Image (cartoon, rainbow, N blue to C red):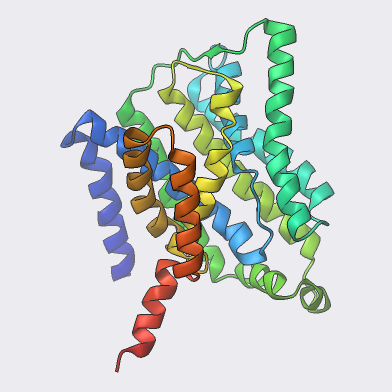
Length: 300
């Protein structure tokens, strides 16, 4: 009970931050909260099942384009409710057909999914609207975007923490250890994988929809930025995918680092991203949470 009260106080303090910090700080916090939700959702599925998905950019882009297409015609709350439904539906269909794959084949397919959807959107825009840009005319300030993403992050982290201790969390871990054993133990592996993949993808689409409110216009290259998938993966690995708090812990320093690198070395950001990935995999294979566990294990 005391822990829940402490968490509630922390969320309340975070909710009040836009009142006392600058607009730039709010913008930076928006990025942090978005990546906290994305990395936590990604790790809940991929970190436990070991089905490494690089489709994050695809579902973020789906959320972005949902707002771009419907924002002028429907109330904002309804648009934000539709975005995760679309993401869930697409991921459900994709999951039914692809989660029978494993290893590098699933990785390659999910990476190609973002590119496939992007090319389909480009083809549609060129042939139907004769332009690649979609303007977003939604009246949403930085504070509203921040509060929405804070609520999403709190729900996602809390939900992952609760589900990790439930039967679903244990089922995912058994699937990750040995899927054949999971089947023999009575776990419906196909249903579990597809539903969790679709649910976490819905979260990504919702985050993409909220983030799109920052933009004046979007195009397929902005919406379906493949770097997002690798950034989310690196953040989850840095924090540690085995704990609900791990991906969030990894997202905060890396968002700050990427903000610095993108401003200081804009033409070498990809190289810096690759170096971060190599360093984390080589020196922190268990992430920061794994490092903490090792330090505790050595302590007398």
